[in-house]
Image (cartoon, rainbow, N blue to C red):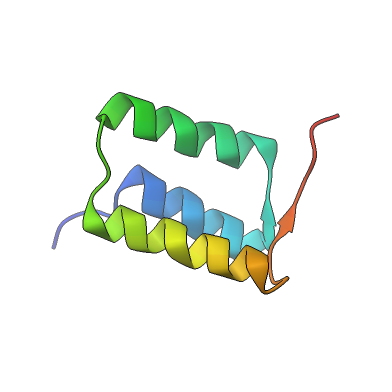
Amino acid sequence: MAAKSAIRNLVNQALFVRQLTPTIEDRINLELTVQGHISDDDFDALTNLMQAMDAGKIRLVARV
């Protein structure tokens, strides 16, 4: 079985702590930049994260 991608791991971390922190967001953006593309599985994970945010299940933490 293939290991989960870094993006899916970061999304799972955000879902677990119920917050999208600046650190998690930066790491997701870095992974997207490094990879240069997004797999279908990563796209689905990010879509789930955005849906959870829209539903109020995930809190966006602002930078200080």
